[in-house]
Image 1 (cartoon, rainbow, N blue to C red):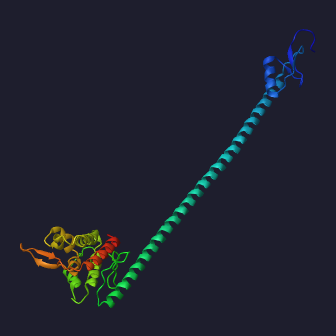
Image 2: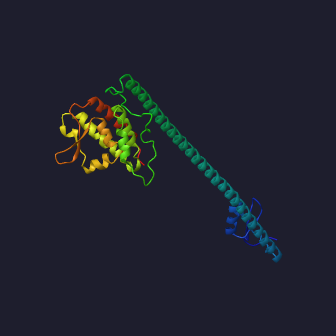
Length: 303
C-alpha cells in the first residue's frame, strides 16, 4: 500500500483525508477551514460502484437538508415580515383613529362654542329689549335717541326673531297688500314699534335673499340721511324706480318702515309717486332705526 513512486495525493494533516489534487484540496479547505496539507505517495483507492452510489445518496441527502433548512428560514422570515406588516397596519390605523377622534373633538368644540355664542347673543338682545321696553313705558312709548356702545338689535315679543322664521311655502307670494296694511294699521302704535314690526316682516323673506336685499337698501337710505342731512336728494325716493319697486316696495314692510321714520308719500310734478322726508325729521330716531337695520341685516340668513 503506498509503495515507491512519486506524489500520488495530498493528505490533510488536520483530519487525515486523502485528496486527489490541489483543486480538491482547496475545496476541502474552503469547506472545513483546514489548511495543513502535505504531499503523499499514498494512492487514493478508487470507489466501488456501491461506494459511489452511497456517496451520491449522501450528497443528495445533504442537498435536501440544506434546501429544507433554507425553506424553513424563509418561512420564519415570511412570518416575521407578515407580523411586522400587520403591526405597522395596526399602528397606522390606530394613528388614523386618534387623528379622527381629535378632529371630532375639535368639531364638537366649535359647534358647542357656536351654540354658546348664539345663546349669548340672544340673551344680549333680550336684555336690550327689556331695557327698551322699560324706557318706552317710562317715556309714553318713545325711545331715546342714544345708542349703546354695542349697537341695537330689535326683537319684540310678537315678531319672530330675524332670520329664524321658515320661508314661505313654495308657490305663495312673498308680499301682500294685507301685510303692508297691517304694518301701517293703528295710528296710535309708537313709531319705534312700527319699525320693529316692519323689520320683522322684511326678515321673513328669506327665499332668494330678498329680505336681505331690502334691509340693505333701507339701511343705505337711513345711513345717507344720517351722515349727510344737508343733502336734499337723500330725503326723496322715487317710488316709480324699478329698483325700488323690486327691492323695497315688493317686500312686505318695506314702504311702511320708511313711513314710520317720517317719509311722506306725495305725487310729483310728473304724476309719479315719491316718498319725501321733511327737513325737521327726528335724526335721533333715524340713528336708532339705522342701528336696528344693521343688526337685522347682520342676523339675516337667506335660504
